[in-house]
Amino acid sequence: MKISVDGGALNPKNSQRFGTSVFSENLVKALQLYDKKNQYKIYTFENLKPKLFWMKGKVSIEEFKKKSDIFLALNQALPLYVAGKTISFCHGLSYHYYPQYYSKKDVTRLNKQLNEMAKRSDKIVVSSQKVKDEITSMYRYIEGKVVVFPFGIPLDMKKGEIKKKYKYFIFVGMDHPIKNINFIKQAFNEFKKDKKYNGYKLKILTKNISRKRLKDFYQHATALLTASHYESFNFPVLEALSQGCPVIGLKSAIIPELKPHVNLVNNLDEFVGNMKRITKKPTVQLISQLYIKFNWKNYVKNLVKLY
Image (cartoon, rainbow, N blue to C red; front, side, top):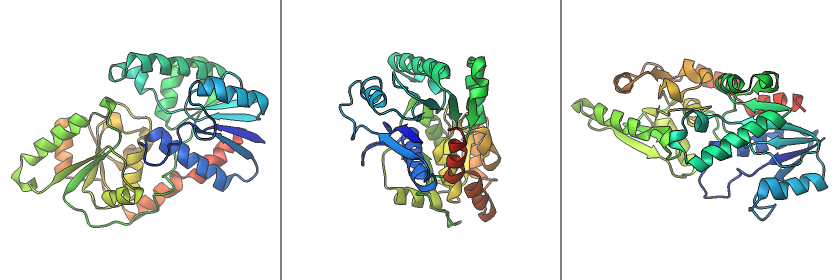
């Protein structure tokens, strides 16, 4: 079969990597590794120019000229024309539930894309049962279309070892109001009021660093801190756990599939208390289980069944 893929989130080197780009990069690599039967055509801003009117214009024209059996809409947006089946990917509804953290223009655009995706998609793939429950509560008629495939651990995060922890906490993610970084800073300041913890530092990693360096941060950090108002998956949590790094997170920042492995808290006091007494820490056994449960080979196997 001929499969077209929206690779618009495949960022050039040195550009900012967000969750959608990490997902797109890993899925495209996984499709090449684990599906040798089908032919894939990846649309990117590099191989299909200009960027202006890209999805509704350039991609639509290409799909009309060279018809594919399947279109994989990796980033919610759909072309005007698709010859075959459309499989869309919904990465969460933060803009719908927390519009105050987004521009009015983005909220309008993303809700419009969501409505179109619900109407036109043959299948909609989501990363967590949480997202399925949310989207089907909005569009009851699509419940049979929505399937849950948890992401795999990023392919460049090879299985980590339990290493010595140093006196620092980390936050990993984009610098966006939805991530609630000020809460983490406030928690750290409260933590440092106890003189026993004077030597600890907080590293806020919002800019691109090498994946090798990031892996080293995970392996030696006391814990990853996350306090997002909303998350639909949260790659850094899975990455941290896979590298033996404990995670402390507000319940709003952790999807159901990852809750059993995380130090969950409800408020600032509990957050600070867990920073002082981390009870849930990844073990060698847990890390092995994570690589079995969250892997891209299974993701591709399940995705191909939808074709």
